[in-house]
Image (cartoon, rainbow, N blue to C red; front, side, top):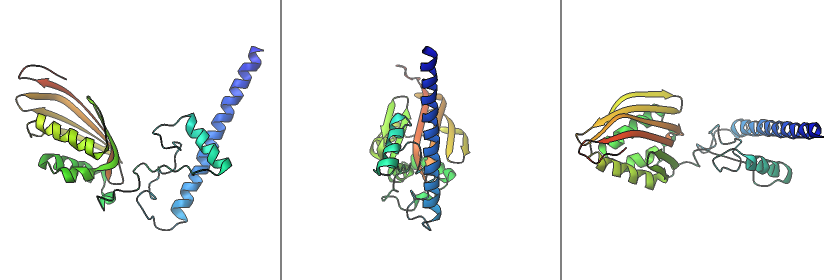
Length: 216
């Protein structure tokens, strides 16, 4: 009996995997039709190859709820599963979608160096998320506020960039900082860029306070 139960479990898993693969194949066809059959893209989102994905309910993760959402759409004609990583453009920053990853990262550091917060705001997508050692910032308002606080902490001096690596839409920079009070011997920033804006940004730096008090 235990053997029969195990076989049934394997069959259920196999059916689930097969359904996921079939659904992914079907959505890939939809993506191709949307890009080829409709002529020139109307918005940056239309040209985004990630707009159809297995994260069908757009909750930021791929799990059983996405499978259920996809089946409901497939069999019941509910809302079509459409995911656009960058959102539907950034009305406040026209033309940014043409920037390359290199240009985005360059503009980011220039904007920080000049403290041009309006320009920095256009470097981030409306739904951008920054994760650092202190927590998470979501959206432009929180991100800019955190960067302004960092500028105050650094006494409006900028770190020294020692290395930048870029591969397609992913970038990483290494940096150091020492203003006599705050020291960062090994700082790292990682970026995910889509449609000319930063979508995800991760920052890690070990802080040392030479004036006493300590920190991380």
